[in-house]
Length: 100
Image (tube, rainbow, N blue to C red; front, side):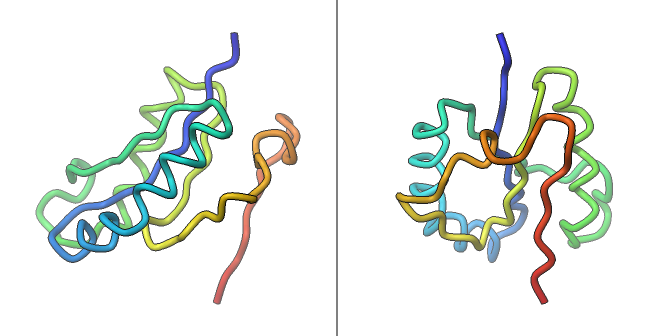
């Protein structure tokens, strides 16, 4: 059975405030996609610096338990009609959006 997950990172007081707004949307989307929703909330890669960007390297640890991972920044609001990205992006590809 294929096991997929949606993962976000929320480390620190400010990020947790943001996640408090977006988390219900992530949970709804994960339920709609029938996948697990995981929040990385502890720094382990760069524990001495309050900069959570390096913590994306923790995603590697989850590849032992999941076949595919969708990483979303915690400040994204996923709409109810958002399509299942696991169905759109082939298993042989990486899907990414560059947002500047």
